[in-house]
Structure formats: structure tokens, C-alpha cells
Length: 253
Image 1 (cartoon, rainbow, N blue to C red):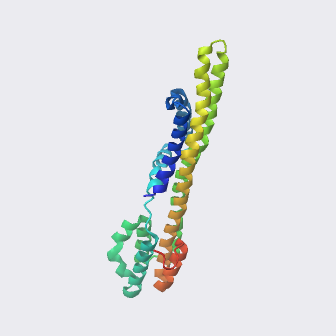
Image 2: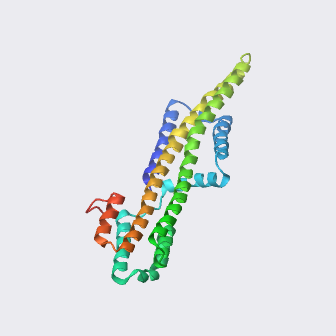
Image 3: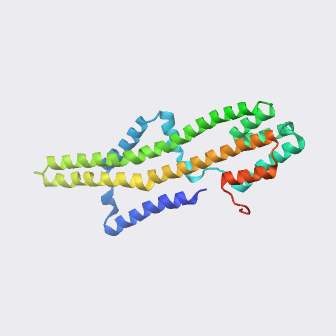
């Protein structure tokens, strides 16, 4: 669980609510037309930018910002080095009995190990792996792009709401009772757009991008291990390479 995501987003909204409460009534900042314009408009326009399935997947990917599901680096390295040790001592075919564990660890890793055990040429394995990595990276990038789009479009629709409110206000200058609602829509939509973008969407897109890059590094570690097993690389040397790849220093837990 990435507690910083929860603390960051909740803290940003809480501080805004506290500031509003100190200055006046929080209910004064609740405006249904503004919500419809900013939130509804931003979501609808973002949906237009992506296929529906990708858009929904992008929204759901917020769970990855809370719990990316990535392994502990040292445990991950130990797991992979142990596999290399077994292959060196007992041969690659001895890994067949653990294939289910490899798929349980990561389906991408399981596919690589299946190809290695089946005796496929290492260059063919690398070629298949690169194709799979390209697809994985594209999917992860799309998830990031959904939140980036929301971060751009919420403020844009906030400005649209502001223009709508100003037009309504100017059309009713002779009616003082209509000036208040028009001004509320004009101001609050801009506020909603700015808050949603800067307290939620932009931070989440950055966090998802961080985990996307880290996920790709873990995927690369699987390919590194398969190549090392094929070449019979010393497991200690493999450990050093994995630690360098994952940015783990010697003696770090």
C-alpha cells in the first residue's frame, strides 16, 4: 500500500476544505450546475479521447497508485537468483517443475521461462519479449494518459463554466436576484477545475507514470535472468546486475 498517495490526496482536499470553512460556509461552495459542467464535461471530453475500454481501465488504474503490487526489490532479486542457481546446478529442464510459480509471479515471466525450457532460441525469446514489453508499456502509458487528459480538461471545462456564468450574469444585469447565481457558477467552476486537476489528476498521473517506469524495470529484470540462465552466467554476477538494474545498494534490505 502506497500510503503517500492517500495522505497526499486526502491532505490536499482536507486543507482546501479547512481553508473554506475558516473563511465562511462550506455549503456556499457547493453548486450543482458547476459540478455538471466541470466534472461531467471533463469526464465526457476525456472519454472522447480514448476507446471506452481504455478509458474505463484508465480510471480504474487509480488502484495502482494506491497499491501497485510490485515486489520487494531484495526479495525479487533473491527469487530470481535462486532460479539461476537451480538452473546452473540441475539444468534448465529442472525448472519445469516450478513453471506454475513463475506464472504466479508474473505471466510475462512465466511465458519467458516456458520458451526457455522448451528450448527456443534466445534471440527468438528476446524478440517475443520485446513485442510483449511494447504492448505492456503501451497499456500502462494509456492509463497515465487518461489521468493527464482529465488534468487538462477539468480546468478547461472550469473556464467554460466561468464563461457560461458570466454570460448569464450579463444577460440579467437588470435583475439583481440573478446576478448571484450567475457569479457563483462563474467563479466556482474555475475553482472546481483547478482543484480536481491539481489536487487529484496531475498527482495521480505522475504517480502512475512513476510506477509504470518501475514496472518496466521489473519486466526487464525477467528478461535479464532468462538471458543469464541461457548463457550460464554466474549467479553472483547476476545478482550484481539485478541490484544495479533495480537500484539496490549492497547491504540494503
